[in-house]
Image (tube, rainbow, N blue to C red; front, top):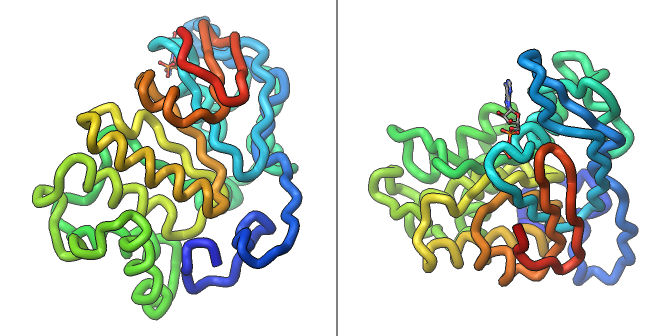
Amino acid sequence: MAFGFSRTRRTRTRVPASCGLTISQHTVIEFDKVSKLYPNETIALDKVSLRVESEEFVSIVGHSGAGKATLLKMLLAEEAPSEGAVLFETINIHTLKKNEISRLRRRIGIVFQDYRLLPNRTAYENIAFAMEAAGREDAEIAADVPHALELVDLADKALNFPHELSGGEKQRIAIARAIVNQPDILIADEPTGNLDPLNTYDVVQILKKVNDLGTTVLLTTHNKGVIDSLKKRVIVMEQGKIVRDDEKGKYVL
Ligand code: ADP
């Protein structure tokens, strides 16, 4: 199992490369001519078409107001498109019922610029809480939280509270929490926005590791150094449109 977690792997992408199987990639996210017109007449997305394959690492860059947040909100079913369709695998996200949306969201892990850890819980408890919320058994929680802590190289900080962690450590705990339920996609929304270069490097290394283990990663960032060091696909947005989509892109705005 990719993360060494207890649960049976759910998707094809989860089989570790070392087992010698050939794993076929498949489209996990598709935007088909998606437009979003907010009630105040702002065109936040303008006929955006985009495909992301399983196990890709895709960075989305663009000036403030370019439409990045709106794109992510569509994936999480927080906003509905005015036109077009957003598909998760073959599911049209915006035709889902409420309980199906909850299930969809469980397949997507998220980390934010401001970490959003629970301040009065330890690192361990923050990660365990995500598993409890997903209805996981105590035995699974006891088995998987230590693996998640190891994955982000913070086993020794399990009992620290967030105020006892550096910014980079807080973000690594947030990543552990986001992946502990083995999502298909990890969304990292400006995850290094509050970090110094050293902590930024550590967080990017962890994101790469998560991706290498089979999780599709969507990163939004303003950090030129991060984009250039990743050498992965870069999508540039401008005024609600995708204006560049480069394999192994560089940061050009
Ligand atoms: P980014 O994440 O790239 O900064 P956003 O998706 O937040 O871009 O915003 C795209 C455009 O949509 C901007 O012009 C913004 O002002 C507008 N916008 C975002 N959210 C709303 C909203 N809830 N209501 C009206 N306009 C919005």
